[in-house]
Every structure is written in structure tokens, then in C-alpha cells.
Amino acid sequence: MVSLLFTGWAQVKEVQTEQQQETQVSAREYFVREYLIGPRDLLEIKVFELPEFDHTVRVSEEGSITLPLLGSVQVGGLTKDKAEKKL
Image (tube, rainbow, N blue to C red):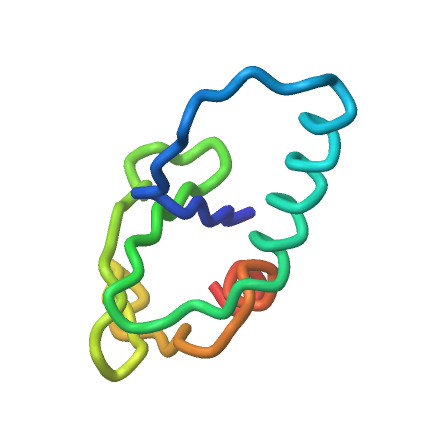
């Protein structure tokens, strides 16, 4: 099982109500599910129970990443879920 994490997001700390926090979490989850991977995105690849295969990679201008054993993999234009399935 492979999972992707998006890194490099900044967070601003604000005092919020519980409802605002729940709305923000829902919006963030939707954004992560629907976001399309693009050039220069930084992806954290985690392989279940095989930490030696975990990598952080930057998406090339052509939309691909390079991983050991897999070589070049086209992920540009894919959502997180579709990229996970492809890997």
C-alpha cells in the first residue's frame, strides 16, 4: 500500500470556534482529495511497512517523478487517490 502526503503547506494559527475548525478540516480534506498534482509539487511517498522505500520527490516540469525500482512515473494531472493507485 502506498500513500502520498503533500508537504510544504504553511499554517496560520488563529483562534476559531469548534464549528469553524470542523468546516476548515472538511475544506482541507476536500482540497487534498480534489487537488491535481502538478509540476514542482513536493510529494512524500510512504510504502506500508517498508520504510526503506519511503521517499520525498519533486514532480518534474513534465509531470513525472522518479522512484527506485519503478523508474519514471507520470503523476501530473492526477489526484492523490489516482496517483496512489497508479503507484
